[in-house]
Length: 176
Image (cartoon, rainbow, N blue to C red; front, side):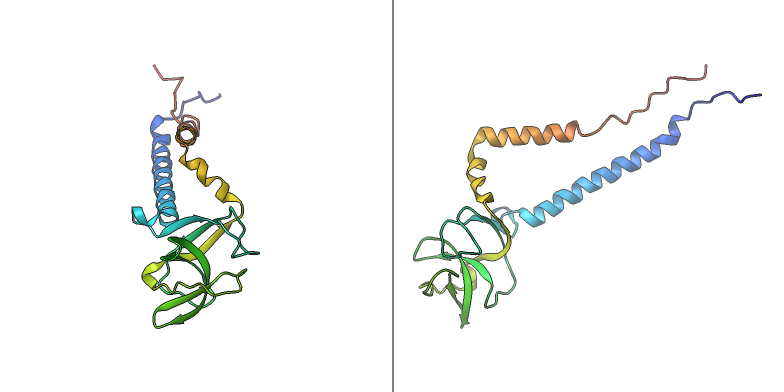
């Protein structure tokens, strides 16, 4: 004689659903934490700056419109590509350290035949080249257009909200 079908108890799947929900939440929190650590600007307590290359002084390694990610470092050495605040040019300059003398840095662009006239201290340094993304600097001006930022935010919310199927379990056969 065949055994009658017994619908699975709703309690058997609930702990695994809770576990998956907790794991998902932890993953999202870890992802946000990692993104913050990697990309938060100094103005918001982070240590990452983003710069779009504007000139030709670092050719051939850095081209105009490349996006450069800079990270603060505990120490800088000769040969490092570092950005500093130039008092002479009143802007951020990204060049290679060629000398360090009494806490002052001497810089030179790879494509330049001369040394920079500024000799910044460590307090003037923005950060060391961490990531270089060719041509990505062209996107930066678009991030200042409100409707584009709004559209990206809406797409992010929709992708999170519609990211998966509902995990609710409906027991269609209940014992009477």
